[in-house]
Length: 228
Ligand code: 5RP
Image 1 (tube, protein in one colour):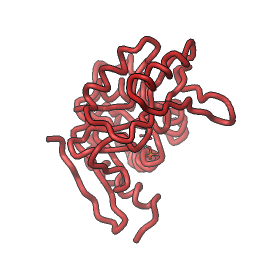
Image 2 (cartoon, protein in one colour; image 1 turned 60 degrees about the vertical axis):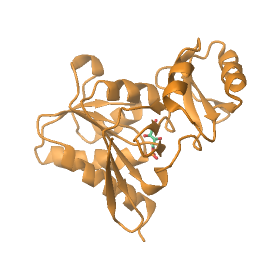
Image 3 (cartoon, rainbow, N blue to C red; image 1 turned 90 degrees about the horizontal axis):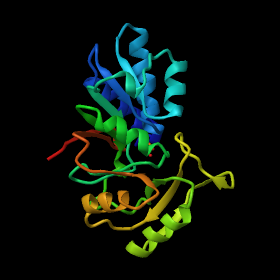
Image 4 (cartoon, helix red, strand yellow; image 1 turned 120 degrees about the vertical axis):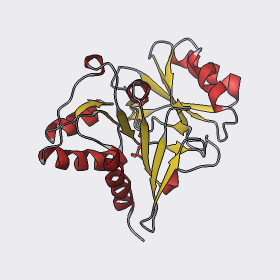
């Protein structure tokens, strides 16, 4: 059995197989993508030429430190590929994302990409989405109204995400409401309903966006799942 960080690294190394010279590449956020950024930086040092769009300030900072050339989403017409992590992955490759608070930028970058490849350890695979609290990004103004709206409409516990005793502020100046659905039966419908609530900026459901998931397991094996 190998440790969790090594499992994540294995998935990240495997994802490098998807990267080709000349690509415009979306670079996700999180502890699994951390390993991908390290691998990518190694190859860039050896001469690989890619143009990268980061999905968060944290990713931008690490990538820049490691010498990876970055551009903004506005500087590209589309991306060839995005590599990102996920908090939950169902058999259809529908996802919950946003555990790291970067869901808005991650969804915009993924939506502009020809291909979204998810890297994760086996613990992220689920039969049904919803055990992981669904992150919903909201504007700070009147956030309690949005909290009530989500909680009453769906009968779920909705908590404001905190950091050091203060509301967590996203890269785009918003708050995050973590919604404990436990089981999400119609993720596509929920994603639409949540985004119609005034004050909601984006939700962490990524439906029909990922085309492949690379899942590394405790025994060192790697599973590749393709979208149906
Ligand atoms: C950040 C995300 C991450 O991709 C997700 O939280 C998975 O992160 P990790 O690889 O650290 O488990 O959506 O907003």
